[in-house]
Amino acid sequence: MFFKNLFLNTVPVTEAVETVAETVAETTEVLAESAFSFNPANFISNLYYMGVGMLAIFVVIAAIIGMVYALDVLVKAFSLKLPKKQ
Image (cartoon, rainbow, N blue to C red; front, side, top):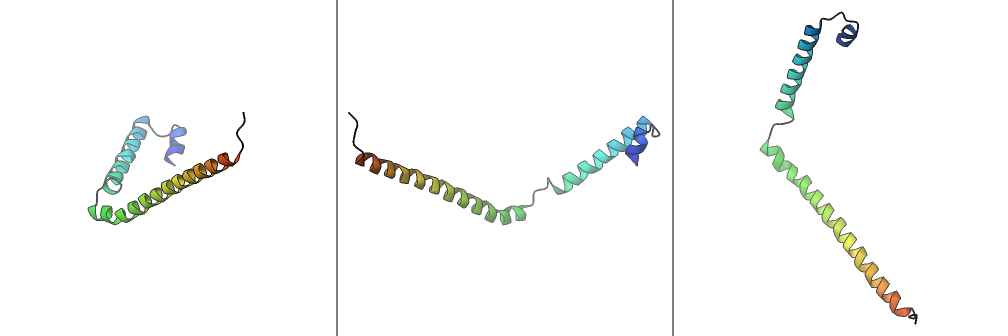
């Protein structure tokens, strides 16, 4: 309703600016209270998820290293069997 009145020019500009400023202030307060607070207990409980993520990264890197090593062995094995061009 506010924006409809704003576009129809029925709300004075100063009132619109004050309303927007109040909305921004309320939103800032809500964010400051909820999203940006540090709770050590939550940090400790989230260490499990961080460990699982790090383990997953380690497994993926190990799989990539294994595949590269296997390709290296296969390429060397097949290159020894092929006759060399002169």
